[in-house]
Amino acid sequence: MAQIVKDLVANAGGGVPRTVVYVGDGGNDFCASLALRPGDVVLPRTGFTLARMVDEDSKTDKLLKARAMCWATYDQLNHNIREALSGQ
Image 1 (spheres, rainbow, N blue to C red):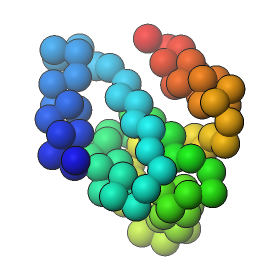
Image 2: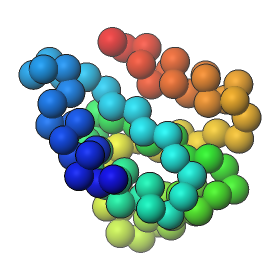
Image 3: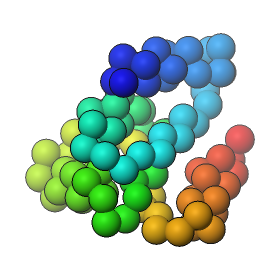
Image 4: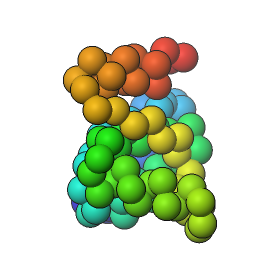
């Protein structure tokens, strides 16, 4: 999964800077999230492993470069995606 995200980020927008938005909830999504850039966004689902890992990373290692926006409902997810992409 991480390699797929790395490839996506490397080719995002055909050379035009674009925001990559990654939605996940499992622990395996954390590794893929590490491939995101500072202008990208990861959307971890509240109460699931990815959200806990992102929270822990923000307190310790700070390996994640992308902005994290947690969500619990599909309305929140929709709002976060729209906010993440509003500048494009």
